[in-house]
Length: 159
Image (tube, rainbow, N blue to C red; front, side, top):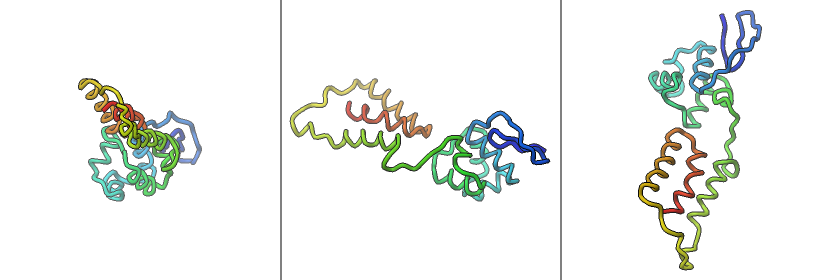
């Protein structure tokens, strides 16, 4: 029997072998769930989700875009979040990419040039504005929050 987890494979004798990497979060969740001997229904119940939701995550139809859900999955599967996402992460309320983007958004909202009679310039055309809003919305819906936040200052300045 082989157990695939990340880029490592262990055979029934406990010998480690290299394998192709498991790429998506769903594939990683599936591999760790199987390693723990849990059914989809059991894991879904332990994290407060439906079996259908977990099946969609494992098949790549749905993404896990909440940190709380990732934390629950990692705790039940007894792994680090890094093992599930395949990349390091840190909660950085006062630093990091998202916070840097947020500081740009704060600058837009706290500017006072309108008090000095300075106009921000002509707004974008309606089709351009729709395109910008659509790009931000797609990034947000795909849980690419750093990208959505980076697009926001230009969108807000033009309005």
